[in-house]
Amino acid sequence: MQESSRARDALLRFYDAFTEAVAGDMKSFDRVFSREENLLVIGSAYHEWVDSREKGKGAWGMEGIRLEAGDPRGWEQGSVAWAADRPSFVFGEVRIPIRILAVMLEEDAELKIATAHFSVGVPDEVAAENAVGWSEATSSH
Image (tube, rainbow, N blue to C red; front, side, top):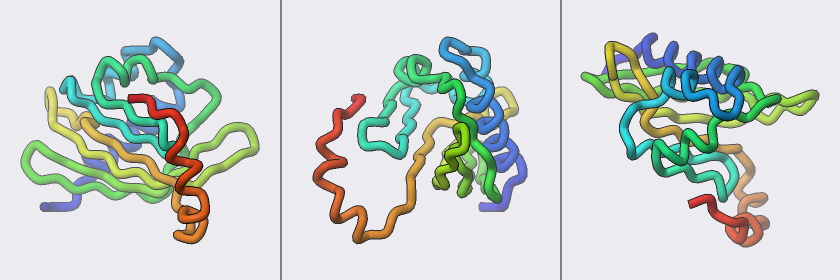
């Protein structure tokens, strides 16, 4: 395993595509996501679980929300790479610090996201107090 600026740059390309995307913008979706049908994107909310490329296309494009990079780092080995960061979701005056881990595959000499997991870091006590209510939210799968 070696540190990878390609993986870091692929994550930054995802941030740009996410920020610029509008619903139905499949060109930007295809630019950053793998062609694999088993695409998996897990959002920070309990119900945000996208477990296929088709569902990913349907969920793509959240106008008015941008991803602002933290200090992304990437690694790769062979045709698989991964990157992690502590970016922020930003909309209007609201800024939500999050975490992301993205696994990428090499396709057509570029790294494309096959799996991504977003999370919001909360203290364990807060998670314990709210776990039941959060898990009762409607799942998207």
